Length: 516
Image (cartoon, rainbow, N blue to C red; front, side, top):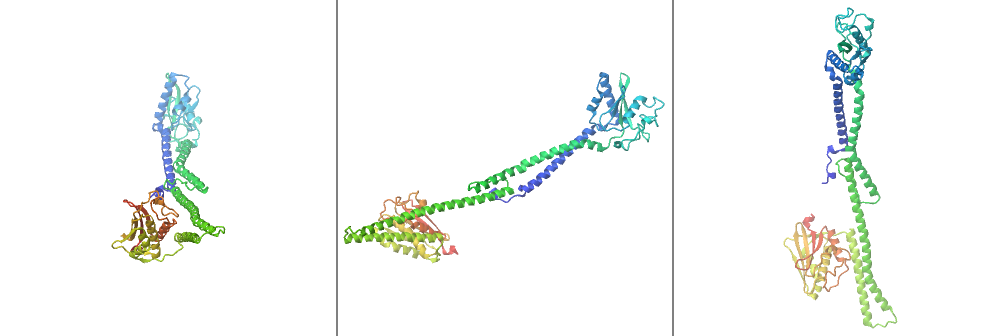
């Protein structure tokens, strides 16, 4: 069974492929987005594993080394470039201009001021106004007071000191050539997670849109692309079929609904092509039949007209014998014309189904005997021997006895006509399964292979193939009538050559048991 006509599997359905494709696209999108989110969080939170004190000391040492090597070093650019992706923010204040800058935003609102005060007052214990805890500024000093920002709610207190006595920031000094060149302040509390999400959201959104567009493109290429191409092919085939081209076919590969539609279209196109070919052949046969009928009828008509015109000439003196011979020829041509017309009408009734067969059980022995009796005078005159043989257990034939006799008479007459004097014609009947096979063989010259396919065509005569025979051929309709009769009975008829010489015609007809 062709693939396009086989039962369609569910996973080849276009609807399932679209649904599964979208599910796969969403799954891949979520996985990639999740992986990117984890990667961004790791990039932002990567340095968050360090404690504030460790981060402050690391930055302070880094800047101390850079400034010791180059006093004009751009600290702000270095901090933003080197530490801009860190999750934990910090503030750097240099001793020269007391300018404060951070690695990233946002930072606690009071952290720059506290870093400046740290740079001014020094660590706890260096000034009596400074509290005893490291990193804690003087209590009550308005320069250290200030409300916490909304991004840092839940902090340890205002300024650098917490209400619970713990510091709000960790500090590390930047030392260059033994002098304090600045301070690094790292808040104890971490920024809210919403800050990270707000910073990562644009990147994730852009990547998500890009992934969605790429996934849609892949789906269009893998799912809708082949389907679109096959639909375009089907559209072109339908347009060509509408223009009269019945040889076009659509692409029915794929196994989905589009391929089923294409397969249906192809079957319709094949049916139309077969019907168009049948109509063309019927028209050709009709034209050929008209030409053949005209030719066959014109021959006796021309002979009849010629002899009648001759007999009607007053100036032509004909004796009684000549006149009688002319009248006999005209009468023969009239009978020949009547026989051709009768055969044409008979053939038209048989092939058109206009005649009802009177079917009954027919004894094969009687059928062969009547055929032999009908041709016995001609056989005796030419010295041709006709034998009839009925095989053992040959069943009765189911059919119209008169029509079957007519078919067998035509075949036998054709065999006798092409059998030379002194030859033999044999009629044999034998069982063939639930059917009866009747063969008519002669010892004539046989039939060339080129003529065998056309023997049962109307008005086809193979006299040239039967060279050496003296009996004139018939109208060319006898074997066509034989085929029509046998086909009406549901049988088959064929012609072939006998290896030893001669031709053999085989008719296979239904038996009474086979018909039941």
